Image (cartoon, rainbow, N blue to C red):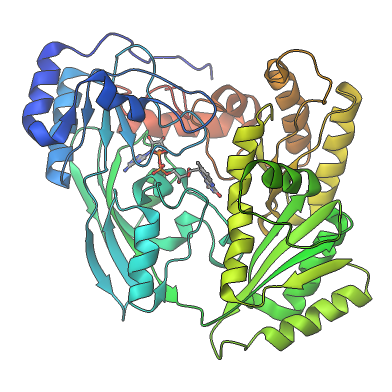
Length: 481
Ligand SMILES: Cc1cc2nc3c(=O)[nH]c(=O)nc-3n(C[C@H](O)[C@H](O)[C@H](O)COP(=O)(O)OP(=O)(O)OC[C@H]3O[C@@H](n4cnc5c(N)ncnc54)[C@H](O)[C@@H]3O)c2cc1C
C-alpha cells in the first residue's frame, strides 16, 4: 500500500488560536517567540520548528477542550513532554501549521497505593520525581535513563522508553497498569485501572503506549512499583570483546539469576570521549581494554547480601578468562559514579559530534556478530572510521554510533544515509529492529517504511485512520497516514 502524505501545512487560523487561549487562560499558553523557542528545538540533532502557540493545560479537562477545538478547526497538535526525544518526534514542523500541547503543568501525583504497589501520576510528572516519590514510600519505580531529570512520564509512555533496567523490569510498557488519555476527537478515555489481571478485550492502552502522540494525548497513568532494593552491587569490568561480554552475561545470569539488574557494554572509544569532554569523571579501571561491562546486581536482604555471590561469580569469570580486570564499587556513592559515567556518554557524544547514531536491537546472542559484521562493512566503505558502540547488552540493544576517520575532509554527516543503509540492512538481515528504544519520529520514518512488512504498515495506517481520521495528532511522525 502506497503512503499518502496528508499532513496539512496551512498556518493555524487566528480564530482557532483565540479560542484555544481562552481554554487555558493567560497562565496556560505562550505565544511569544522567545518563550516558545525551547519547545521548538531538540536537545541534540538539530531538529527545529515553529508554532504560533504553545498550550500548557493544567488538567485533563483542559486538554479535552483543547483537542475538541482542534478537531473542529482541523488544527494539528504536537503533544510534548520534556522534549528530550531523540528522533524529531517531539519538535514541530517549520510552517506554523500546528500547536504544541505541553503537559508540563500537569505534574501531580494523584495517588500512591503501597499495598497495591502502584502510583497514579499525571503525564507531566518528571521521571526523577516519580522515582523519588516511590523511594519515599520505600518502593522502586525502576525506569531509569540519562534524561530522567527532564523527561516526563507521558513522554516515556509515548516512546515506550527503555533505559538501563530493562533486563530485570522490562520497558515502560511493562511498568503500566492503566492510562487516561484524550482521544483525537477530544473525548476522555478513563482507562486508569490499577489491575494486574484484566482480560476484557483488546488492551487499548498498548496502542497509545509507544504511539508517539499519533493516537491521542496521554494525561495520566497507573504505574507499577517494586520493592526497593536494599542490597546493590555495581561492577566495572574489562572484557576482551563483545563475545566475551556475551559469555559473561550468560555466566552472571546462571550464577545470580534475576538479581542481575543491569548489564551495559561500552567500547573503549566512548570511555575516552567521556574522559575528554565531561569534567569530573575518572577511568573506573586502570587497564586499557577494548571493551568494558558495567554490571549491577540488586535485590532484598542485608546490604552485603550480594557481595560474596558477586565476588564468587566474578572469580569464576576470571578463571574462565572472560574478564581481564575489574572493580566492584566499594560504596553506593562509587556505584553511582559508575552509572553517572555511563549517563555522561550521551553528553560526550554530543560534544565530540560527527557521530552517525543508531539505536538497534538484535537477539542478545547475536550482538557480537552484529558488531563484527557491521564494523567490517563500514571499515571497507570508510577506511579509518572510528567505531563507537555502547548500550544495553542485556537487552540486545546497541547504540552503534561510528565517528568519521580523524583525517576525514568535510562533514561526515553527509554520509549518514549511506551509513544507515549499511547498518540497518545488516540489522534487517539478522532479524533485528532499527529502533530499539528511541522510536521512529521523523528520523526513521522513511526507513521504517523500508524495513517494516507491508502488512504491518497497513495495519498501523488502519489504526491511525480509525482513531485520527483527520490526521491531527502529531502528523508526519512515526506513520504517514
Ligand atoms: C541524555 C539522554 C538520554 C536518553 N536515554 C534514553 C534511554 O536510555 N532510553 C530511551 O528509551 N530513551 C532515552 N532518551 C530519549 C528520551 O529521553 C526518551 O524518549 C523519553 O522517554 C522522552 O520523554 P519526554 O518527556 O522528553 O518526551 P518528548 O520528547 O516530549 O516526546 C517524545 C514523543 O512522545 C510524544 N508525547 C510526549 N508526551 C506525550 C503525551 N502526554 N501523550 C502523547 N504523546 C506524548 C511526543 O509527541 C513525541 O512524539 C534519552 C534522551 C536523552 C536526551
